[in-house]
Length: 225
Image (cartoon, rainbow, N blue to C red):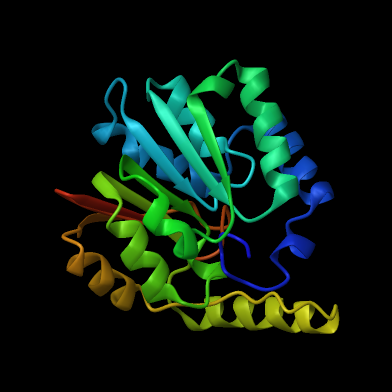
């Protein structure tokens, strides 16, 4: 089972897709929403801090935070192909000894995973059917800052999600994306002691429905696409 808890995850996030993500990262750096997430985390970073990156794919967030001074990162993902590329990228960056790689569904494995100063979910919540299970368990792991990227609510976002799911259905894939209510996500985080602090928006057209919101002590940061 993958980090998003979605059947068919590995068929969507396969080796070819992982390599495309890697090549885009080498060419252009982090995607718009990932850059916003990293900027949002900046005030809370400290030398030697620990990172838990859930559904982290090829490990872009981990690499960027380790370069910025984090001490250790744990990357949890359900795609064998993505983790293989993540290991190669960590080796290439000279930080392989500072990243722990865990394959599987974070919700199922949460009890055995340690807390961290920084917890990130970059475009993961929208892939997971059990939002409350994912957000509550991941929120409980954040000692200082919780950063997440997920779609904002709106009719335009609903159209995009519905179109994606039609595409997956026509392909015969069981994988689905989800539009979870931001207010519901905030409520689950609040139960873990996380409060949203601010909201930003992406440049129009850079990423559909994108924005950022943050919360404080313990803090929750959200990039809303």
